[in-house]
Image (cartoon, rainbow, N blue to C red; front, side, top):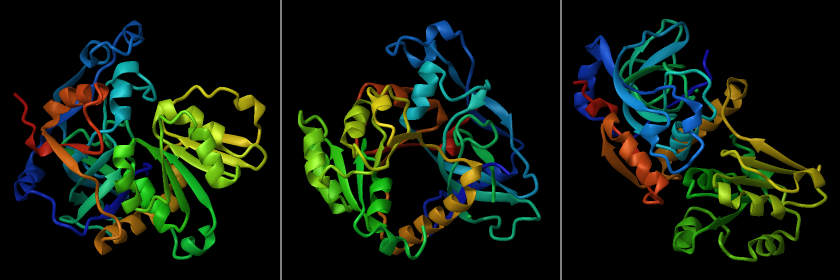
Length: 335
């Protein structure tokens, strides 16, 4: 079993034409190739000069026991994708397929799977760098699903989010009943408050740490950040005495960590060890989407898999903000 989770989708988003791919024997996949490590040290190098990516032909997978095959209609781009492509981090085996966010339709199931069937529309979180389970390809295979008392348990707790508009995390925290403080650009403050942020702070403010400490009486114990530049300020805002936790998803050089043994920094990523917890969470997310308690982020479709590199260059140049870039693998055709 791989550490990948599926949730049923309750809204119609798939193009009917995608069903034709279920009977093909080969598919298009967007591969990240290995390259000389000496080329990956400079962040301004074009992606294709560091870790080249290319569209290739790949066999359509068949499900092992406990697995399903998903035809990928939509594959989301994340900043970590171009960080891997530029610096060769996190992934150890090459060549491989990138992409972790996806949604699609099930085209095959193993006999052991009873909760899902062919034709079900699903969304999922895959592991980056696993050729058969990552989302930058037309078909992949995956392992086949927050609790009701979470709001009561979390009353009175405060969470700090230093995010580059990671909206789903804020939705979930607010729905869990916690007080949410978000550091972000002022242009997004109204949006963030509309989805549950209790307080918003300009992440570039010179006194951002003082503002956070004032709002939390210096007792902040939980924080999450996706943005490297804001990681230090987030760490500095944590309680100096109480057991505190900071979750990061990008590697960061935190100064002074050795002086505060009560502050624990965790590099966050999903894993098969957390399968039970994650299954319950994604079940909650699926129902919350159906009930309208969570509204998906705005998206922009870039086209097929062959458009990924250009889209990544836009992300690097800071041309993408508050919108999710979506590749459509079904629109990709091999020459």
